[in-house]
Structures are given as C-alpha cells and as structure tokens.
Image (cartoon, rainbow, N blue to C red):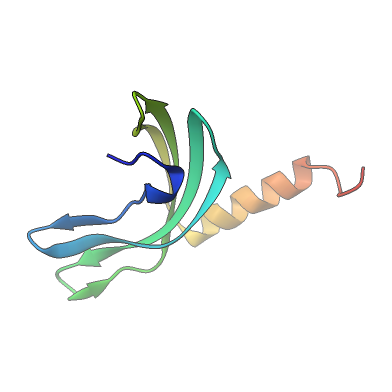
Length: 97
C-alpha cells in the first residue's frame, strides 16, 4: 500500500503483463483525502497493443499511514472529457474575478 500521494498509481500487472499502464497523473488535492486524475492505457490482448488514452479520477483516504482507494470515476471517452471541460469552463469565473 502507498504511504505517500506520489506512490499512488493505477499501474496494474497480471501474469507478468502490465495490463493498466499509467501515462501521467495530476494530484488535484492532497491530505487525509486525496484526489488524483490519471491518464492511462489498458492492454488489449486481441490487438496485442495498448488502448487509446483513458482517464480516471480517484479518491483516496489515508488511514493508519496508508492510502486506500475509496471511489473512482472513469471518463469513458475523449468526447466525455471535452464535455466535462466545457461545463467546468462555463461554470467557473474568469481568472481574477
């Protein structure tokens, strides 16, 4: 288990194959409850290649010195990611307001 936010990852290996490969992450919040946005790819055995980029937001709670995942939201497509960005840009005030 991870003891620091920097150690948290979505990398997952099964039968010596990296089936979920983390490409990048952005720590949105740190503390007893941490939120991280991950960019990743999944291994697709039928294609013998990794998938297109995917995105997930994960919430972790630190208890007894280690982080445990408590919830996640998978962004299902690039279109959904763009719609999320568009909604947030519409709702958030301009910088300096």
